[in-house]
Image 1 (tube, rainbow over the protein chains, first blue to last red):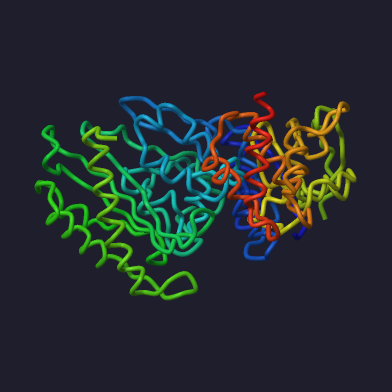
Image 2: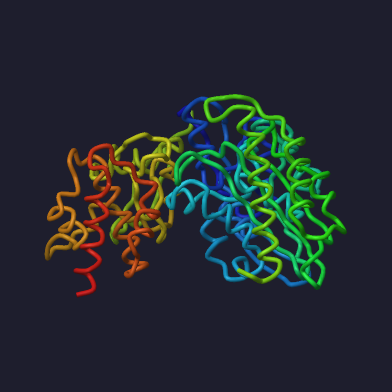
Length: 292
Length: 158
């Protein structure tokens, strides 16, 4: 690895100042499970590494029944799945946090880092999109909010401007009779990158028999995570049935624009989007009905 | 050219100070600065788990931690697993079950296995295999390792 400077700001203001001082040559460090590999391999370079783990807001994992869940950008995966409020209210998020990398990686890697790394295959991003997550960003010109589905702009690229920092992600409080699920396909049991992944979130009516609304997002089938808006919208007001779910799966497949690479082909990935959309919708429906 | 940084940390219960460059990983610091070569370098990109250590109570791959990040933290390595009285039950079980061949992955497996049994003394085989998915072994085929961890679990409960 090339020589770097390292700093540990204690406040968001100090972190923004540090990030701005080095401009494009600064990188924020949370768990380091992507950044340190990239710096060592020469895929990214930096003069200044800003370790954000001493900033209280970036470590926060807090739930409020009105405002929802706030996930500090540096909170590691294990703090997501070990948190009783998250487990009770956001099992769709636990799906992702508990399958990213190994136990060792989950001890360091954060959902915020997963978002900022902006890989098309990121496992944490589809469920955050499906659940309506919003990214809270701080920068030299103040703070701003960006919907998670608008955050990534290309492989490894996102809306963060020079000097800006992801502070946290807010996930709205779950509506009554709602549920979410994330599944990915990998050829191994663990420790692999998604060939395709789907996150689905549904809100049902009080009978549990009709969709109020739904959101579906896809991984590994485009240059960025995909918000398959039409697929989710097609379910609004429909009865829960094989036909309505099949139509949503068809629209999700239409939203996928994958490439063929060493992990899978275009045809396989589009097929997987259909399968995983059906499965995640059915799992989300079961959770919405309180059946699991 | 950044200079050396003074880091104060605790390693295997001992207050430890060292100097390192910010770019150096905790793994490099352990091996090359502190001479603690029990922790092994395998892939150096977080896939193989050979460099597993415990950092503030969680297992991590020390190749993906900067040495400077150890400031004020507690680090436990393979060197801290045995006690003056003898080997840890996990170490004995690895020996008795022949759960190693070339041995490069073994320190990482032992640190990870001990961390699991400290936390979940009743972990079943499925849980053990899942927990150890981040540790790769190219010799044993894993069965002997899993049997050793189950054996250690029995002995630690006895």
